[in-house]
Length: 140
Length: 166
Image 1 (tube, chains in turn blue, green):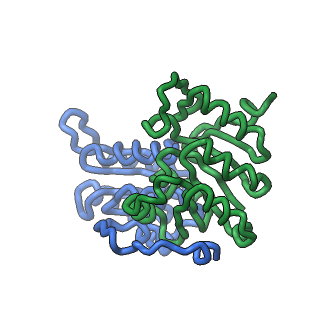
Image 2 (spheres, rainbow over the protein chains, first blue to last red):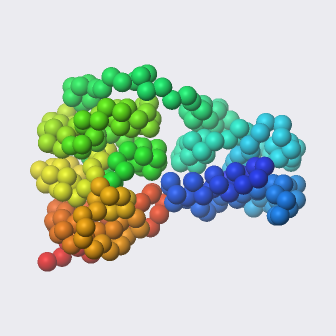
Image 3 (spheres, rainbow over the protein chains, first blue to last red):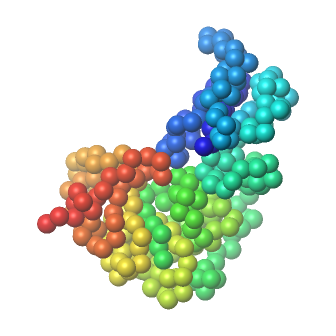
């Protein structure tokens, strides 16, 4: 089974979880850490540890963090560096989470890189793909 | 084969373009809608929402029906999206044996599907009036399964069972 942790500065993590549920209905096996909120302090190290303890031998853990080298990310990397069953993604956005969570292939680092590459941040430019397909082009 | 005929007043949006298309493993998405076919900007933004590996077109409902009747269409994994039950009937009626499932999610919450008659909620994000219900019953009598399900992991309601009886 795949289990997910989204860890961020502030409420990005719970916000991403909320968006994921709106879009897919998925809410199980998604844990969040909203770090450094003044009114809801959490111990990031402990929370990461708690998540890792939920992983059984055959489980895959995928952890999404916000900033590369940010303290949340560093804590996660530190705690998971020797764990082969855990993958860490940084600079997460909603399309990344959707691509990974909806994926059904066996997980490995090469495949995970492909999924992440499929969900880039992009600048909208409407002229880039205006051409509409003909019926014949569509029907192949 | 039409893997799903989806009735969704938002047509192509996140739940449809990104989530359902992935779960259904489709390679073609056809939007059948008489208004959007004349709105180039909407078509462009919809096209951008659709993953690159999926072919996308938008056609009027009657043109869409013609495309779907083409023998070549039967070999493709197709996802057809319409905005209302009326259009769904036009698509589904002649192609009943080629539709794996009819699905509704997001209906009656936007002005486009509100007709100044009292509405009631009959499933998550599905609000209908008495005219809609007549069309739902007509759809439920067709051959394909018919369900209300907003997203692949949310609860599903069997409309064929609820509305398909005499």
